[in-house]
Length: 113
Image (cartoon, helix red, strand yellow):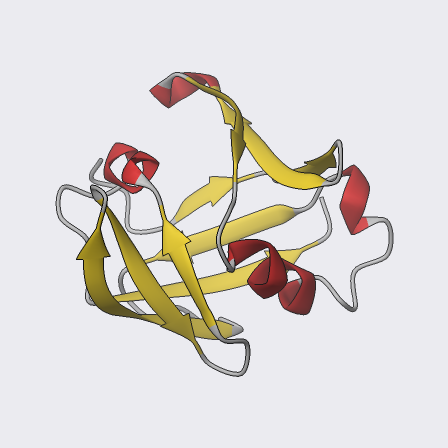
């Protein structure tokens, strides 16, 4: 992918944060291992976030980003990241649907759809 900013639309499905992205072949792709807690923190001020919200992300800072994820280490073909203010989480190999390599940093912002 060559986009500077990318957007997905996570939602809660059976008590798990998931997202669909037909462009890269993902359906109900779950967030796991610490990432749900990161998402809970990001959407705490968004009404009805469980029905879906816009998640903007980039490997470069952008105006009004909310949090910065910093890469820690590789495990099981994915990477662990720490996020400012909300612990650590593992991003699975679906990460490589959006980035050629695991970025050192990922900047994120959650907002209403």
